[in-house]
Length: 351
Image (tube, rainbow, N blue to C red):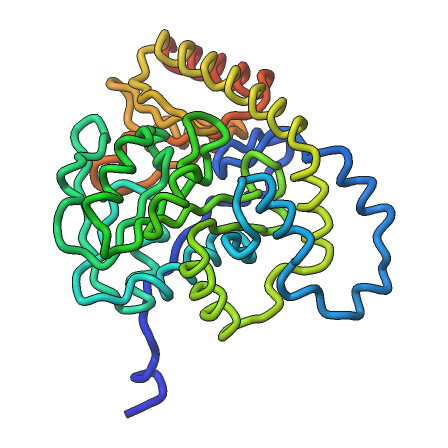
């Protein structure tokens, strides 16, 4: 037996492409088209670089305190990680260890099955209906945990708090994780339910609404007991995941919440305009509440549109996956970027 026979074989998550194309319009990874708070530049110019020789505060005390205040929770209910993907990976490892399968939608964030394969966890895909909506009754079955994004990715569809609360009530012996990566672009966060349900864990990210994908910060919010166990697992891997610079940047961002809200409002306005214009071109457009739209055209193949857009430097996301292979996920850019994309599609469809 060779050493290769002892390897763990996994099919890794495939991130959105980061192409090197001159003058491209990049609409494939749901990045915010507007920069972060201008106060962050002040932070960067005033950093004490001598601090970089030291390990960062392992508990990010100042940032956790400010986040707890922001969400109306206690510090012990806030968990920080190196991007929400790391937070989610630790959540799977910490909470989903029963004998029953983990439940999540069949069309959702494609990292979830990767975690299950990596950790060798059983999971069951809950099939969305023909309109990509979640059937509440599908989550009323034995499980070792439940997770789904709200709004969902890549569809952008949203469920309300009553829907989430019903799942929590009917699964008291399982952790229910609501992945709120896109919640600032529509809907209401379920953080308000945390103190009512100790089996609820909510994750959020600084990569989308706060325009900080480049620094990697994710958070989890939940009961003190749940967060304590999450930290126990995290500290078994890495006691210093959030670096000193990231902590200072994120602190400045959370203290300038008005900047975030103003930029989210701009994205939402552009998203609604984009949905209207694409429908006028004949596209089928589910009602997205995220910073992207998920669309298909009944007369043109998804792969064809993806290739045509790419040839003119407009990069969107396409999956060659059953049920969604005719759809494109298009991140919301600036008004000018979306106008250029829509004008191209209009010309292409009418040629």
